[in-house]
Length: 66
Ligand SMILES: [Ca+2]
Ligand SMILES: [Ca+2]
Image 1 (cartoon, rainbow, N blue to C red):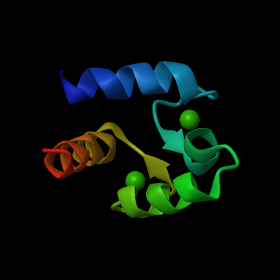
Image 2 (image 1 turned 60 degrees about the horizontal axis):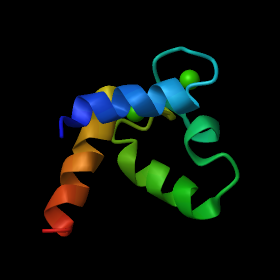
Image 3 (image 1 turned 45 degrees about the vertical axis):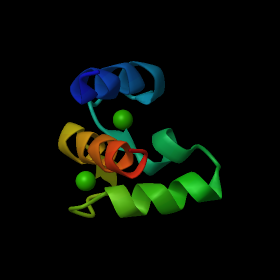
Image 4 (image 1 turned 90 degrees about the vertical axis):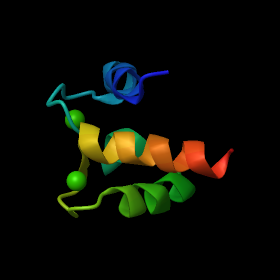
């Protein structure tokens, strides 16, 4: 599966303000676990997940589940 398309479908589902990025509110809603994960994934600490950061997380997950 192509990770970029997963980001696109996640965006379609969660990007409520349609700015092309996932904010912590959009990604985690009110789940503390996901907020921690978000902080980890947000490599440049701008408070948003862009496609690059999201795809990186997909790859990391793939390697772990090998
Ligand atoms: Ca957004
Ligand atoms: Ca970021």
